[in-house]
Length: 278
Image: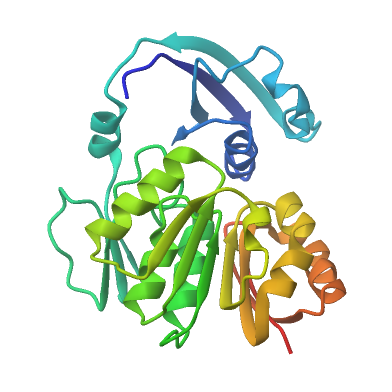
């Protein structure tokens, strides 16, 4: 898509964990791509989405323990898919699962996922997606009904189907994620993934054995009762998109919705937690 973008170039002191936290916050307000630098972060947002007061509600930028400065530049239209292709490298998760694009050579693992993310979140490179893939790799999904909520590229739904899950609903509020999930399902010869554009209001009368939700803390807590209602007894809920410091709040929300904590993974201050409905 050749449209103008706004680039924000952030300098961060200290760089970590500021870069990871800021990236997550910016993604929630419409920033679509990021480049991590030695001393900061580049962030890109379509000019049509940008507003001069967009950063006012991102309180992290104002935290006294960090020195965060940024400059703003308008970037002329360019072929962002070509830019992405030049930057995207395949990854391998625990020697069991590979995520690559169509222009990469095949990778000999038990599960190979072919993803064209374009503007969607979810290539496995981010810590949250990586850990959710790890959770799925450790689970028996044969015949399980699955919901991938906030599906992004649909990469988690694709792995679920490759592990025998069916049927699978993949839902995202963003139209490009909905289209991208359909594209990636086709790339991976998936026949059980049904993509939908929308939010938790689509879940009326739905029931699943496994619910995957890689979104953010506030949305997870808001929709926790819906997830619990839609989860079959004995089912599993996988949650990610939040930080280690948020785990207690997530656990409390789950307990209030009759969901029992099982375990969690941590990677660079991010968490992917597993809960069950007893």
